[in-house]
Length: 120
Image (tube, rainbow, N blue to C red; front, side):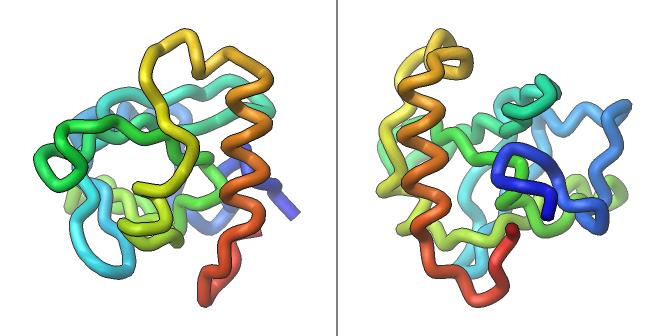
């Protein structure tokens, strides 16, 4: 088990690859673009800019929910739907990426999601 905060070994993750700007695709359509990523061991995640569909809101997606990274197509496919990600604990500032209380809330939320092919 790779856990919620680590990329699956078969996801195509390469620590040398900068995912900034990659399109984030959910099972029900394009979610947005990767704004930044964290390689921090035990807390790997992406921050995606959702654009207009959630009023420009950014969302934090744990690395364990990344199903596939396609470097050639510049896409990141995630397990959760757009609605599930939209309902995740609200991300509002960079300091939250290191706030253990916020990250614990995010972990509880994503761990409780029902996805057809669980990432964990």
